Image (cartoon, rainbow, N blue to C red; front, side, top):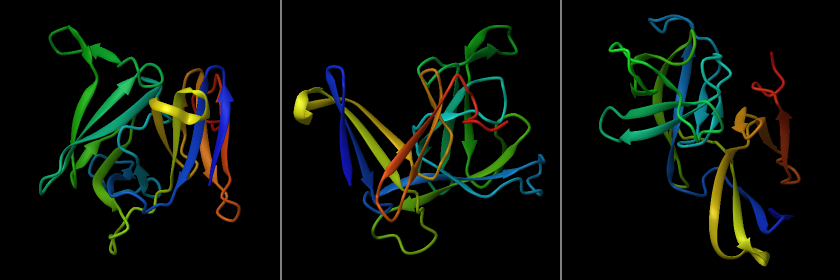
Length: 200
């Protein structure tokens, strides 16, 4: 199901994609409250690579994203933190007293410091029509902006959003998306000037 909405000179299309419509990897995270990863802190999270998530775990930055940098036997990911909706990277002092962007390399299956007081074990889950064991079931909405009416020409901005209610960062607050599996309707909930999607 898709819907188009006019916004100024651009036309936006929101398209619901079935969980197994594209062969891709999602990043699976198990959160823990201790540095040895013994005490589970929440249910598993499946995050989309490159999507801008609100940092609901600490006040040191407003958002973060994850990028897979190695698909080897032990995958690795880069975590970046941002001061806005994933355009301006957060910078902190290094041991030499110089400012540098906050980029950390996280290794799968290892207990890693995540955000704030939390630790995590990360891994990859396949989202594909051919996947039969331990698959990601994340449903994804794709929002595409076109310069011409009628969705003509090349897109100039494409955003992907998970539809399980995750808290995502946007320009002046946060937002979440959910899917009605009966009607196929996607609901976007915006939280202006709120860093945590209404939760405290």
